[in-house]
Length: 507
Image (cartoon, rainbow, N blue to C red):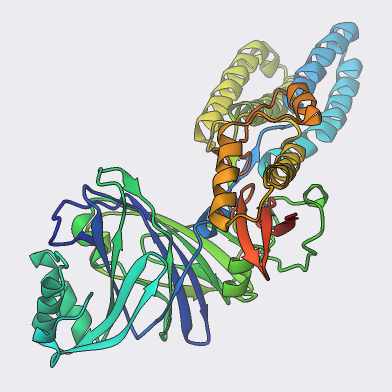
């Protein structure tokens, strides 16, 4: 639950949440990214957990990397089998005219039509299918288990056997907990749960949505859980994405499985060029340093999605394990959806035409109804194609040619520009400011940069992978700047989130 502090009471809303859950041998790692909107600068965040956790800072690029790795496959270039089918039918009409309705010629015609359409339809149909927190007033009833700074958060892990004392402690320490939260807090206290109370301050007091860096909680539990009851108090409807790494396929009430697969954990040299990467969404490789360290080679990953109502959030989300069953996710461009629908409609029409033609050949009475039957088949094929087009999940697609080469060049060029711009031993903050200035004003004196950017109509520092301009973040297509052993390093992240390091030299 994200709440304001008493010093600046305001209404706080949570539009969505994303979480990473990794469970193994009774230990759960829960990483939560919570976006919230509300006026003010001071906010608090209360997370109930089954046992005392180890709290760690997560990087801002963790969830963009997860979202990119497990995004749906885009179906756009679909073979136009419907054109072949229509061409074949026109040829059939031509040969039928040559046969002059002779019975022997019709029999030969039907035989070759069946043979020809079988060769066409089988690949067409298969392709379409694939297609300052303490207060002494309540010390006797409250146990402070841990207190520390984690990133931008000031955290305290507290436990109590008295729900009223806990609520009093929160109020005395400027947590504006609503009164309707008391029964839920009492329920958690009865179950022996602990609470992580955090405070965060932001610079801008406006009501724009904020996304602070995620927090990781590692704790003991017999069964993986995502706490939800407090969240439901100030949320009318909430979209939640759970990336669950575990021994089997994960399921949860009110959630659907959008993706389930076995991830790979290959070894890759940091010196390997970005353009050597061969990757598809069907085979996700876990190469992002933090993600790889935290999920620890888990055999199965499941992406669960759900839009929860307040009634759905009256209970915590407990996860269950089922036998592994791969689930792929696809989205169609409008062109891909139209081509797929036309393939199915044309295949239905051609198949039906063969049946109607055979009946007309066998029985005389069907010859009279042949024209009417063809008309019905044509209408049915058009209707079927329309229904399939409407039913396929679609997404807007913009085509970019050579985007991987562009990303590799853009990131390399940014590192080179930093090396050229820096003439003195500057701090990490100064180098970060220089990088932002280069990205904001993308003009450069390098002739090869201008020639290259003009040749591909590219004159800005845009991220083709996760969208938006380049930014300092450990996610695909972005970069970070760090100091290691007294030297500065420019780290770019490839399509799978793997690091590629360029040392920034100093004179």
